[in-house]
Image (cartoon, rainbow, N blue to C red; front, side):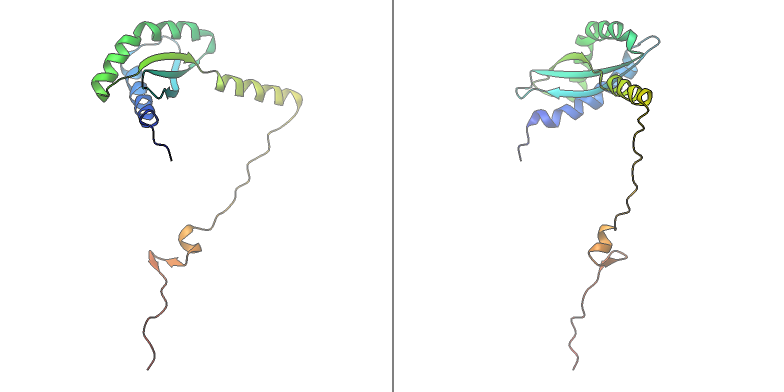
Length: 144
């Protein structure tokens, strides 16, 4: 398994950047969320995926983020103290918007999505013969 430092840093940046954006930035009449963070191997850049609702205000949200990118970089560096700290690059993530569009098209065509089947799995401890947290053991005493 290849454990790159960038793969461990990306979730940290995702979590902290989400919190910082809620506390420090103001997006009037829109909901802006961080969907993905991809850090390159050299830790030079972090590509941050942003989802904006309503999508008509996505240009305005991107302008706010680009303007505040230096400030966000500074706050992230203070909080995480990672060296080198990747520079933030924002891109619009339209994944949710595309999924909603496909769903609307399916509804218009009269195709319903299949309901998910609920499957009941056997609990792992039952499959291994463990009861109440103790493994079932065969008696080690010999009958005399």
